[in-house]
Length: 80
Image 1 (cartoon, helix red, strand yellow):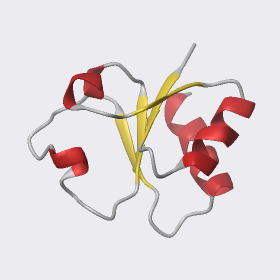
Image 2 (cartoon, helix red, strand yellow):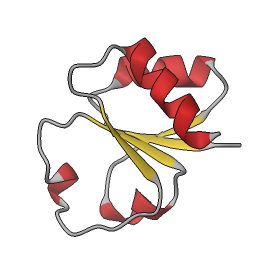
Image 3 (cartoon, helix red, strand yellow):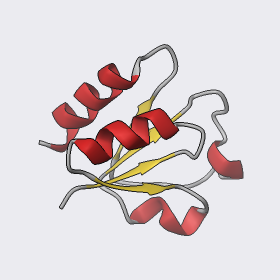
Image 4 (spheres, one colour):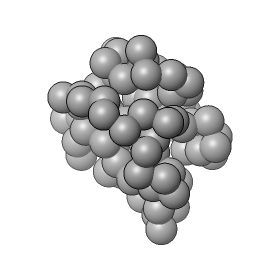
């Protein structure tokens, strides 16, 4: 199952992704940054969760200016 990491402030996106069948986890710390196939972040702070030097092979989607539906469409495109 595809696992999506979502910032805690994006609860509407989290719920919509769960409805679509994704395994969704809230990103709480740096250790979780290698456990997901895709991440959705707010984009309000480029230093996500106080982590400025984390490297991940997963896709990172910046939610700024996007609706929950648009974000879900972007997730679907990136994890196919």
